[in-house]
Image (spheres, helix red, strand yellow):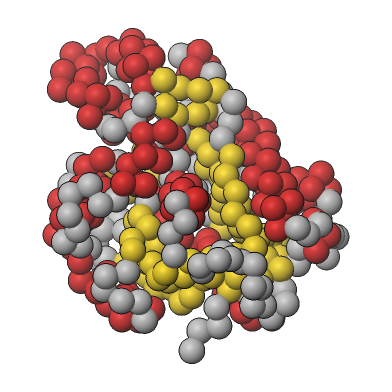
Length: 352
């Protein structure tokens, strides 16, 4: 039997620059003028994305100027550090502990490169101990929120009493690229936002913890490396996003989900907490899992208010679900590069 892990606190944070979808669409027409001329239907992406507002570490004017990999990396390090600290401080305070009580820090991020990694750069500012264990994780993409929580839970279980801080931070807007003129770049500009989430975990049975984490599972489909990911060039990361993704999800998610539910010992009718990659992907998930259209309401609300922030987005959904006083079993899921589905058993506890 998998030892449950208590979530002592869950917090989220967004950067200061608010992006209204209508404003982004207008600027995108300037950035991608030639692309829109070839593919005028791309204008509909901004209308049909299901997004009203997003947030960015950089103002929109920044993206209309030439930026190379060095400039984007500098923006990533500064913006990600600020979000890391904000989300972590909120989670630590909500957990009722001090930063010096943290034994392990798991940092999940795939939208920039920082060596030393983010937790090393902000450790003193947060007040972390010199002997804190650091576990930076790169490359999980949108699956990183679920996989990061699962990894944090495994580390907590390995030594009961260990306090684990999981911080998931992504600056997806740094992939706004007007120089390539690809369809995927327009779609990224219509979908991506920046954000961070943090959770404090401990394997002890804390009576006040509203949420517990159970077992986890993953499934990677062979021959799918081209569905999602990054390319790298002197300008920065370039998004790889296959137009076949919604159909792939609709046709191939159901079987791995059924196997995961058996592995995790979660009932078929348990609540779903999904990463909202986009409105079409959410509809595809509902179809694949035989859910009524509109079932994933919290996912659509987060997508509307924050866009696709990659890895932390599912934690925003989880935070929203907890605020509705939801109780009982659930399974969290997210899809990311690989192409991989990550699953995690959850239990929201009544009266906690």
